[in-house]
Length: 273
Image 1: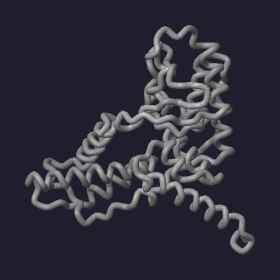
Image 2 (image 1 turned 180 degrees about the vertical axis):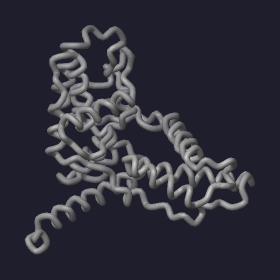
Image 3 (image 1 turned 60 degrees about the horizontal axis):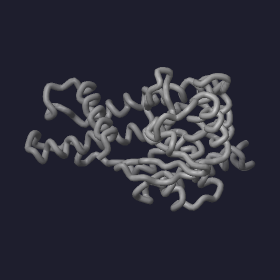
Image 4 (image 1 turned 30 degrees about the vertical axis):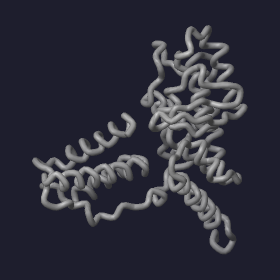
């Protein structure tokens, strides 16, 4: 698995054991697990993060049982929800527009942030993929992206994102010294990281008056859902997102259906009162 994935699983297990406050794993109960997941939810963790934490715990206890470290796997009979049932937060088109208007492009930071937001929404990249982009990974209409498992793919990029990118590069980046130079840099000239992008989106969402609990991955969810809402083929979305399995992409059909149901419940004259 990718290094970031391994580290995420490790953090999930470490946080769970710390939260449970038990001396050995065989002291853990199902109530510990339920309380831990409820605690994550109360702190506003994304549904996908809560789902991953649950999977991490289940696999951890399966391993402990296989190695005869514990006698019983307490997670064995705990149901794992299908991932599409964990509906991620999605921004409306109006909310995305408000978010994209927040950066002030008069300086390098504002121009960079504007470009980051535009590319995230225009391409559906994972935040790690965005941070890993180099200056030479962009041509006139595509991004060359290195995704999970170091698999490369080409992702189309829209005109608005290209306009923001051209403005940022021409006005604030100067001469590119070599073909390995990162596309997005911080004030120290180093490659921008995931935490910086997370903070950026949180700050701009607050300025835009968006009350939803969003993250860089929200832009990816919104990208896919809006494409589907406007008639894009699921296989095309799968390719752009870099999903190996179509079932992972298929959960966006359920998100889109949920939006339809919400609109129906809100607007149908026989239901809206």
